[in-house]
Image 1 (cartoon, each protein chain N blue to C red):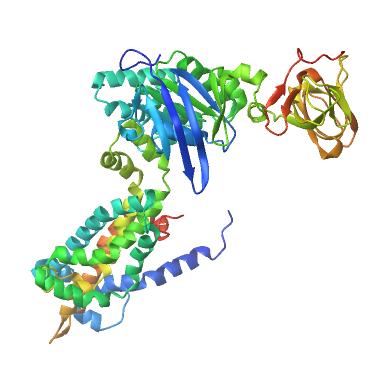
Image 2 (cartoon, chains in turn blue, cyan):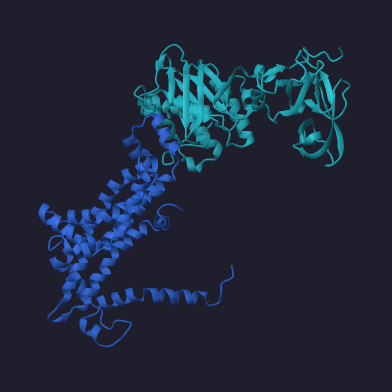
Length: 268
Length: 372
């Protein structure tokens, strides 16, 4: 195939423009604060990893990073456990009001999260879920379970019902069929759904910050801490930013081939 | 070939089965008693074959009626607890399991099988279906024919009371179909369980030469030996179902002991009142265009289209009054569309059906005295 003469140049210019904020942030994270505030330069003059050392040396920093990872993973697992049987039911069975219920699930996502802040805050205070990983994970399920059900239902409906029947004829019980035969068939769907749950939970700040104080404080909330009487610790803030991108990048790597189908909720 | 749990044989009885969906009757008062061994279920596309198979398997509960297997009423019993196997028209296998595990899966769930027994049985059935060299592959890595062989092997692996095959060869190409058909025929002969084989292809039903149930519009239209049914179809619907290429139909009327049809006439095989309306059924291979010395109905026709398949030529003719007639001629014959010709039909090979009820009034050479 013949290439356009400038294709390569245009491509790299485009990529550089897209990547600039991330590269800039990375550049900040490996520079001392004086350099960041001082002269403008693309290439850092003095390279230092002090900011990373500070981040992983201080409990308050790395623990909030871990908090985010813990409640996000917990949320992904719990959302899947709830959504898998629900999606199977929507995909395979006809029951009174099934279509309405299915649509109603999605309307949960149409309300702004702020609407739910006060109820969550009060309920969590009274039942002892305030400032726990489990609490944040449950709160995020409000948004992630409907999404997970929709994505999984799309993938499941693409699998012929005859496979379910064949398994029943062979003598599989429903749970055994589900785990041994059905789940392996929708591996990619589970991966994509987990990714979407992870993504929404990871970037969600409003609810996570409101219903936590210390023990389950998310990384994004900790980042506001860098503003002090001495000014803003730009380097440390950039370091936290870079590290926040890492888990998402790792997760996306595993499901990169299925994401387009996931965005279409399995209906492509 | 197929092993049985206990001694004796099994019968499958459908007793007054009705299935209605969305105001339509899919199965209409089905009464069937199928002995062990093979039975063919033949019918056109929407006859209700699949519905009947699903009811027999327990995948679809009938709205009323009973399903009895081996003397036991199994109507309300879950398909998981029944002794059945089912092969679909689509190639259905477990995609995440290898061919070996696909075949082994019903055996592993059957307490009667121990581990070494399972291994022996899987290899035995795989050998039988000619897929022994593919046991480590996954279904997606197989051709359509191999996938369907795997599905059939899984159905054969466990000895069952009722084995149902719903047009298993319909999605396969011609050569594979011929070969698998022959394999299946040998396999099912002498089976102690009930084997019900559904097909829309009359040639397939004729090849199996098994007792045949003709299904149409959700009703059992005829039960009997397939060759006998082909030669003496009791109704127009049965004759049409068992004719491929489709049966030619010409309207006729009885007058003075003769049947008049499109300006020509022949002696009525049986006495009927004048003015009795009949429908004449002619199989395409009974139509010729060259005189063969015998008395024949001669119908002027215009050639519309000649389809040449190599060993045969299908000549589409337009008769008076806009009626169509297809002639199945031997060998490759070339015709020019638009030309006039004469279609010749030997009255000895005309089925005379009652136009109102569709019942066969007469068939045959013996009953027609051409020179009398």
